[in-house]
Image (cartoon, rainbow, N blue to C red; front, side, top):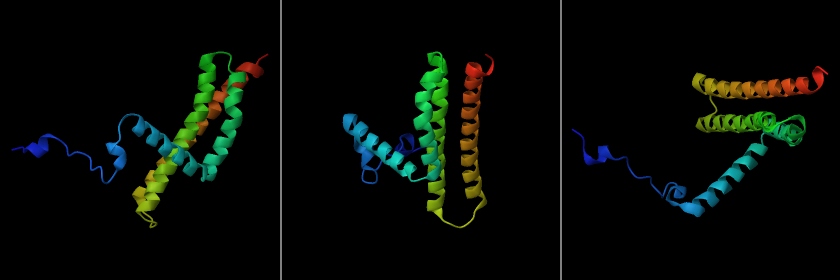
Length: 140
């Protein structure tokens, strides 16, 4: 038999996370601040810095290389996807490291899958850019 507490999930505890109590523009403003903090934290990772440095070059180039908005979107989007997936991978690694430094097969598996996601994003990005470069320069 269900009780009234089973019918409705518990309300979030605002004392644990005050962000849950915010609404409207205040919530958006604070969320933007957390996002900027996340980008700053990502910048401390060498892999993210390398990929972001490449993005500084590749994003403007995507507007030059792409011949229409779809090509520009694919070129730029593939670069942004690498950055997004690298940030998610770093988040996974950070959460695993918080749990503890000892070796665990599930922790290794989670980290390996995050790394594989970055690899696939990089391969996708490289493939899209190689195809665009071939289209533009490869067969005169």
